[in-house]
Length: 191
Image (cartoon, rainbow, N blue to C red):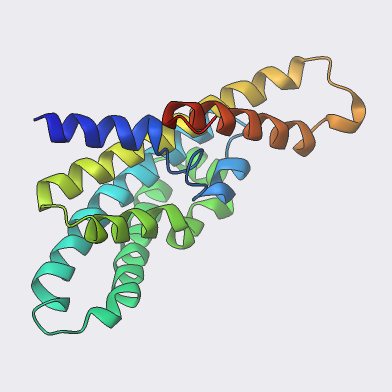
């Protein structure tokens, strides 16, 4: 049980996939303008991340390793992730058209979100069991969502703030992201 607690705390805070490992920056900056879009993207990425973590672990363990075709890992993992993203995109388009419109181009970009592929590969590199891989994937999804929601909340507040004209928009967003990253690096003792 202690192992799972360490996995969770490490993935959410210490090794946050966005703010400490700097993976998944594109949706982090692109979708974090509105809190509702950030929540939707966080949920979509969480769904894909957890299912991809379990499926890729299974493929690696029962297909790639037994047949000594581990060199196909990246291709196999990307195919799994792309299939899951297509499924998520169809479901969101069907059941929540406003969210689908708010996420825009960033929804299909989950396929190329290096955070999803990175977590799938880390599951294998760390030699986790299936249960540990699922907890690891879910924890990173929570960490990703936490980073998105925090950034969206700050950016919404910055819209009403008296920000100098030269810092409005993307410049203040990047400064905010850097400060958030520094604060999360403090959890790992690097600052």
